[in-house]
Image (cartoon, rainbow, N blue to C red):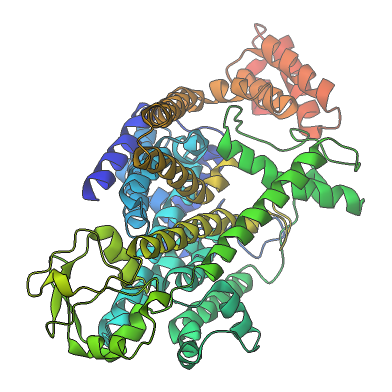
Length: 630
């Protein structure tokens, strides 16, 4: 488990090591170079009342983005650089921190996956961690310095998940002080994630859903029925324990989520920012049909970017993604296919949890017996468990029950790491095929129970839980970018996919590990070979794409040239600005005119074109300096 984290983190650092000497590009200029809050001489208190770009939050022109911890990290980098951000080498420290944060986030993500109860947890951990480390969609977040907000929020996001996992573990052990400490740590990490970037607060909702999936033996249907105050079909013992569904820790998370959101809204003056039509064209469109279809398509487009990141761009605004204005648009078919497939996958996995519900759960057994676990994961069960099982009339009904030995009052059995994870997450108490009985005779073992079927059922349950957890990670952090709550200032932003890509990496990694395990179990060597080769090719292709894409973020001219095919008006306009600053007025004029040919109503491009033409005429006459001063 530790090696998977180390290797994944090292790969993540290596794949972005070619960005360390890059400069400030695109939004970095406004967020760092032109932001007075980043300067060492600016009082530290100022950044807590300003937005990410240095404008007061209550100002009418504020962008509304509140990320003080990210700005604070920029300020520390500026101090490290000696306060001279215009120096050529000043950007190196910023890029070093970005790459280190990505490496640490990858390691934390890999560690968290190893804690999930899965029959293929080790292989899933390796594949998901490596896929997250090399995914090309992360280039904007890591290579672009403004993307530090997303990377830092993701790191705190994972720390909150790890802290809540530890809280649940110690809550089952009734360790009051320790569980409170981990819960407070979870809330602090969630707060830091939100202060790094706004959507980090969604980790509190992810923690609640994580508990519903992994820390309760109730099915999702029973949880929903309980929340709706309807009688569920669980047995009497289950109903007596139904209070566990609404533990005080889950309520604390939900209350904290509401408090954080309200506090954030109060800081912004209780209003949503307004963005230009070019930033989010669908938000200003008068047609309800156009807005609905376009906003339904954008999640599909983002998912395709995660699945096949062949075309990437620094900016997806304006007409980079045309609006869907008619129901006969062919993209509507992809919308229908995507959401139907999504609903089918979710309901099939929920159905799997409902059908394969364990009969005797670990938390029920604990009430009747003493179970001790040593460092080697050896479980010792006393004779009260034997008495409880002797009262059962038909042991063959309990497919998930543990085999036992009646010739002695106690027995020892060894459970490997995978089965141990099942037990610790309130799945059924299972026997492993390689049980090590040291104090009893195996001749008296009960033979009525079908242990392989029990193990298979529990594997299906845990596979379904992992798939649902991956979907939660994919969907919940992405919700603020869907325009459901408020219109956002972008159409598609690749850096916003940094946290949701965790769910995608887990989903793909788990799927590949299941395919490999399936081919190994059936001894089909050619299928096993094909899956391994496909996995290796996928990682190599993604890694190569990331390495090459990084060079597009080397400087602004390279970045804008890379986006000419995706967003021509924005790319040509920005490229003209860069060439004009360099004194290449003829080329700048050409690119300005090309930008206007795609979008004639860009007032800033008209102004820059006029300025460039004037400067071109005065070049060589000695009057250019006076024009620049004016």
